View 1 (cartoon, one colour):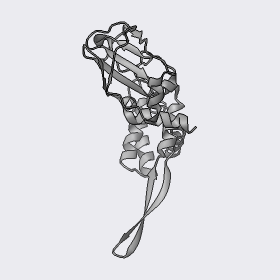
View 2: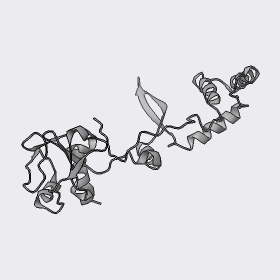
View 3: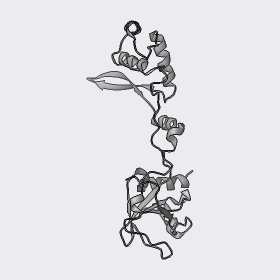
View 4: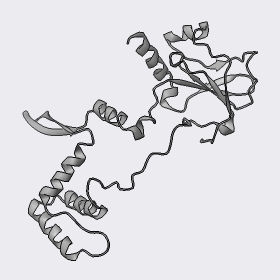
Amino acid sequence: MHGTSPQSHQSADFNPGSPYFQQDDAGFNPTALDLDAAEPQPQKDDIKVEYHPHSKIPSIIHHFADFSCHRSAEDSVPRSTSPWEPFRTQLDFEVVEIALEAAMTKDQTNRLFSLMRRSACGNEAFTLQSHDEVHSFWEMASEWFTPFQSSVVSVTYRKEVHDFNMYCRPLWDWALNLLQDSRFAKHFVFDAQCLYKYNGTCFTCFFDEPWTANAFWDAQVCTYLHP
């Protein structure tokens, strides 16, 4: 559920130093919250967002109709107007993509380019000249992303050992690569949250994203206990 400009207020019960939060560092697993007499009375179905005490972020109550599980600072995923870069044109990329999928040889690729130049028409030019030029563009593109690593997997079959080459991207390096991209870094969530829905009597805990689960909360506790 997505809302626009949520009308919310900070909960008066936020106090990272209170006994309520101190006892939860061993493993927070709330099921319901009682209302504080000093806190503004919520409406039925209100959503309470409670952050991990270590984050020092006060809890907030949203009206159900205005609640959004995404932060207000989030934007839609950015879209490039020229996703075919570093190739010069979209036509260049689409033709090379076909050559790659077909596993064409160097000679076959050069012949294809020769035909494309002869038959090219319209407003979009086909600029590639050779397989070597295509390879240089693929090399340029690969430098923008986490490179693949090669390893050998040995499997015994009928008393014989067979070796297979396996290519993969290290997940940790790939995640760091995404974090270094300013377009996507703001979409990462690092602080655990607890969400509560008001049922007319008390707030009841519920989960909707990985960072609202108990394991995420406990992991943040352990991170601070063992820096």
